Image: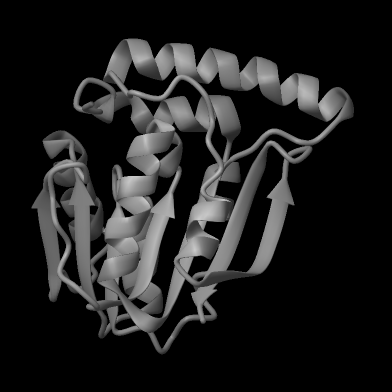
Length: 212
């Protein structure tokens, strides 16, 4: 899986398809976490969230992991153009399926529009590894797509999901062909859902989880 091909076009594709909705999801719960000091961001992409994270947490140590070298380059460029302090930020070019995070290190984990790229067995392995990397009372911010339970909103979401998965499987090689909810896996690792916001007829959601 690699977003290298899409990296130069990702910003305008996101604007065309979703306007600013994805960024609203990414940043909804960012400002209430001023106490976070060691942050792990997975699948950051072109750096729009990273920049806001640095603004909100100017002294935090941030580890940014992405399988796309071109996305990491754009993230560094975005940060530089914003005039923000790049230290201490560590950029890691690696697939989460191959990278092993350090144990019990992070008090904030961020997976925005990332976990939906993986099959159920991969998702369980990823969440286990990240849970092992989390401190005892760590917070987990998560934004992603969802399928509402019923009605027109559900049918609309199913069509959009089908188109998105077909597109990203063709251009990035993601392994998933359908959405798998991470909720039960997060709960099994003692994370509790504190708050969830749903956006755009329930097509999108953004969550704040905290480890008990």
